[in-house]
Length: 229
Ligand code: SF4
Image (cartoon, rainbow, N blue to C red; front, top):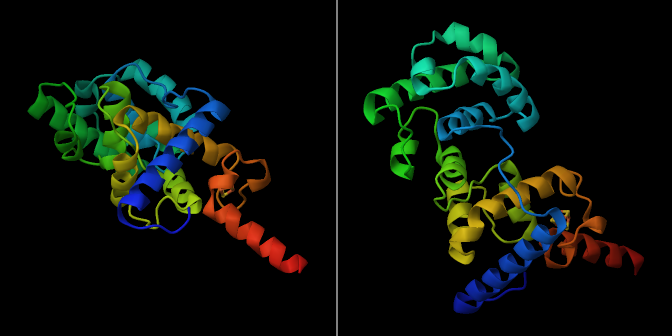
């Protein structure tokens, strides 16, 4: 993005984001949640498990786990050691088991076993941050939310849309420039872009459909031209 200020900067960001969203949607098609689930609560559990773990592994683990335990009351009555055995392959299993059991207890005791559908109550649950809450809000409750994970953080910085590592700031900037109905899917599109053409440390800029809008690609091109002189 070129330098601009004030209102012009906001308009430029809005236009650039809208164009990137349009191109990525064309490239990857409509997106849905990568984590298999049947209820909002199951999505919450799957999202907690997905920290530092692949969706594929989480889906493998939950396919068996949710057959046996699927409701908040089931998890609330589990001993940590028992749950740890089930989720061992997701990594950080001790902390994840502890958080899932504590969050389940809170849902049973404070929300009559129904997962709350707002940011404040969700983020008050143990182990539930804004990213997890946004995943659940956007996918299960139709409440606009833009989850900022490592792909979203990295790619929005590479593109030059933001210049910060703070997920809350990134979420605020993106949400201010994109219509709410695009927040959830835009986050999914960046994640799939991060898994295909723009992985960490080895972006395939020469094949990227948004390279003409990317600050990182512009920097690389400048460098190449400089070397040719
Ligand atoms: S141009 Fe390169 S760095 Fe920029 S988004 Fe595409 S793959 Fe990522």
